[in-house]
Length: 272
Image (cartoon, rainbow, N blue to C red; front, side, top):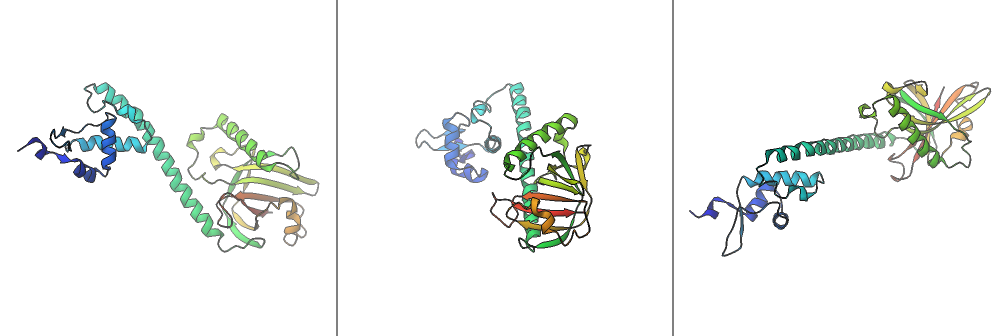
């Protein structure tokens, strides 16, 4: 029996591992994985079954965006310390990749759920629905919202909120459910006047003196393609009859199912 009879052709190895022939040739050119045997007469490449393990490692590194130059001579080295360092280092990269993938699953689930829940509601009409308990980190606006650069205000506030929370809490432990969090502006109305705030949703575990909580309950709301927070008292005039103290929360929803993905839908809520 010739040596090549104990091996897999490059086509057989490609089929077995799911890695293309061109990829295997590329790994050879880069001195990452050389065939176990090259027929001197035909130039055909052959691989040992054991090399499938090396190909699995290479494929994992490609998925993790690990530079392939790190793999040069890796499968030929007898330095076990080098191998240990390689796998320990890239175990962290794998954990980070897993975290990103997990976040994407959560994002997809929440986006689909949001789009489905918005189906029954038409824009510019008042409805009532159950809303779960919410907790918002807030900061009083230093200027009126009229003619203000709201996007810039929200970005600056988001950075400030992130820094403030990081001073007091390990933000890496914040609940995974805080994907597609609510953010926007809210306004507290009373008989003495009105005060506007930036807000960003936070987990209950990080609520502090700079937070506002909204209890679970049934709330009036209206969706629109433009901000209506300053017109809220007129929009909810019928619901506010005889009431002077109330709060308006306007959530800027992305991926709402009512507009393009990069265009927000404003969910205006009346909190009494």
